[in-house]
Length: 288
Length: 283
Image 1 (cartoon, rainbow over the protein chains, first blue to last red):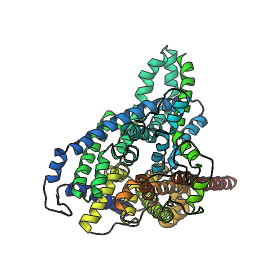
Image 2: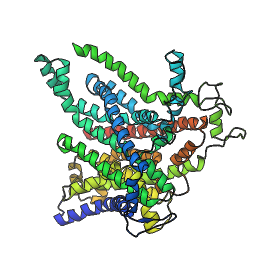
Image 3: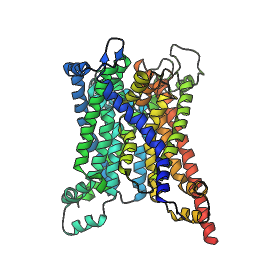
Image 4: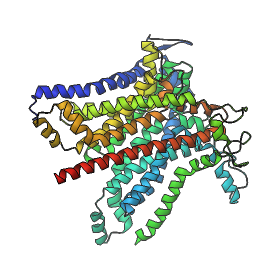
């Protein structure tokens, strides 16, 4: 019998939770707090000390390169997010709603997930022989006679970073949308059709609103990952595209901890605003 | 009816979409069979060969192209992924077990745990290395600081998987065991654990693969000794050769092997559960 007294149950809960909670406070919350703290430290050429100062913050906002990285990050995030929605939604519509057989739908979803079994960095690298001057896309386009000379902007440009990120992250958009579409009661659609609604009307009035939570969850996934990116931009842009993540990596590389921390705080704030904004659109707790 | 037109169009679209997902990897697979050592990481294929696969295992005569420094890195990554898997699964099962009872502050604890998978790796990595390097003044290693950061990332996944499993769990079998005088620990081992084992397996799979492939956190939080993703990243900055493509194909095959082991274990545990249910029916 669960004759345990309430206090014994409480202590049991505490015992079960304590290791995980302590781990997260020490190794997640404390490190994030450290970023904020160190961003106010004094940086000299070779060392850093804990005298508090605003110098690094002034440096950040005084430098065109750093503020430029902030705008590049926001621009690239908006582009990649829109592309993942535009490219992912129709695919999710087919997989989640139009395919009648559950098996086919599952197979298609599994097909989408399989590439994730390859190392993330290899997947990024795989775009190089695809997009390069002598890459697969240029060769195919030339063979088809669509272009005379290879397109050079495909690789080592902002475009290649956008293509690479969209391909890597679009599945995180397809999954949640397909999940929400799959939960729509088919009878509602039937009823609307019986009442004479065309597909367009059914889509705008029923399907889209009901799938919106999926779009929001997908957007949160994609945003968090794109905003924190640095590997894709580093590997596919030939260091031409600098995101906030790239600045952090180079600053840490040259032991400029204070500046790296400033960029880290700005990235955290940006993420907080974006995620809070998405959560305002849809009340996730109620929907799921 | 518009959907009569729409459905085939979208079917073709999904085909193209899957091609988009797989395209780069197909090209990478083809180019891994480039002739060596002269053939570069691009078309045309000079002649088909398995040179780069042999190169990977050190079976080719020495050439100007250095072998990938993956041997020790692979072992480190496997050990790290194993440590991370065990730790985060244990933490995940414990925390999810606690969440079966309502308690005050459960909302905050839930978000605290889930935060670990939401915060980008570049931030966790930076914070961890700041804490180790500038405040505590300790060295960073893949088995110490990077391990801590990995668990922060994988523990939430294990927790959520176990939460989903335990939500559907019928608590009456445990109560039956308790009422027969079996101690809670023994009940957990003999009754609860076998029933939630498929979930534990999934949590382990998540934790292992996420840690094995984890890059940003490791980049900041580990020291001089590289893990596998760091070794791959190191080749980015120098000229790339088809050996890295061959390596990509090999790691993918390894992943599928791992996935098969998971599938087999899963099938076995499902079959055992069915068998037990049948025996109960007979009894």
